[in-house]
Amino acid sequence: MAWVPYAAAFVMLLISKFSKSKTSLIALFPLGVLWLIFLPNSPYMITGYLHLIRIGIHDGFEFQPWYDFVMLSVFFLSGLLAGIASLKIVHSIVEKHFGIMIGWASVVVVNFLCGWAVYLGRFIRLNTWYLRDPRVLLPHIRLSNDRVLFIGALSVFLILMYVVMYVFDNSRHSVQSYEVKNL
Image (cartoon, rainbow, N blue to C red; front, side):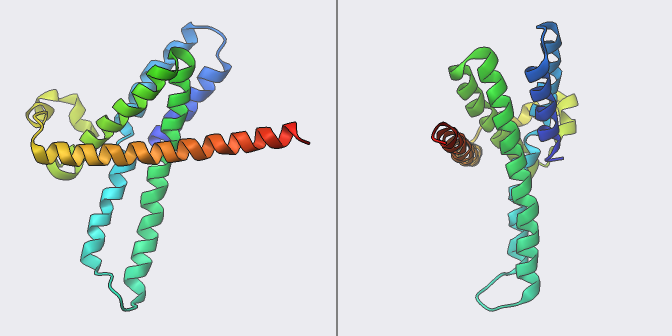
């Protein structure tokens, strides 16, 4: 489910890039909603590291706990990176149509929503399907100190991860542009 947002973002990119009419861009909205609904599954995966506490990795060497750690890290981090890559695609689409300020504001808002959704999933044990019945979500809107700390910390972590990947991606384009000009 962590790859659903990437697939939705990729289709949005194709529509945005190759669409000639404004009416066909209307298709971006339902795809954007689908993307936003499933995006929290990507950062949610990293909360799976809590399960590694039971494995008990310590200073000594036992193969199985380290194998589990590496295998789970591959899944967790690939899911997180797929979410970040999908956010980069959607960010570029939002920037293209609404400007740089709205683009970056959407990055912050989306990461806050992801932090809140991960909180609801990890601690309240709600999932995406509960969006069909908002009455289930309403009691959990109130933000206590613990909720604010978790959501804030996770949101800041996600924003920092996004900024790092954004800078790396843009520096790669700068190097390629520099190499082409100086050939």
